[in-house]
Image (cartoon, rainbow, N blue to C red; front, top):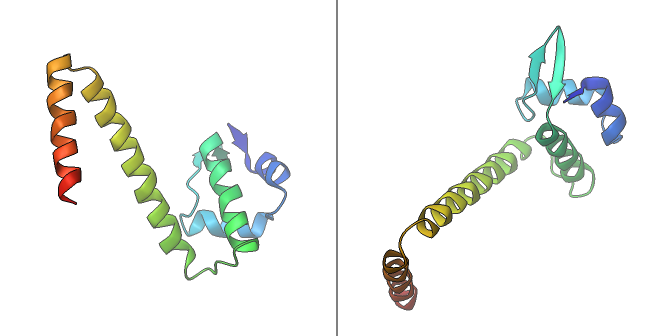
Length: 110
């Protein structure tokens, strides 16, 4: 967990005003604790990503929530697929073979 000042120092490409604005816009959602913000490792990674998208890719403030929303959906789907893979892996061999055969059949139809 990092305080706001630590995030500013660690990322280096964002100032307090912009980061506060991103929090207000809910692009970044740190915990509010003891009168200040506390950022997880994931929050810091998101701040870094927003900096890269703004500075390197020139994504503007109007497009940013759309891009972040799509990325959140993608990460959510990846998490669900991992859970599905884990659930299938926990099944008996016969069930795993049946699932693999069905996936192969469906892929052939695409």
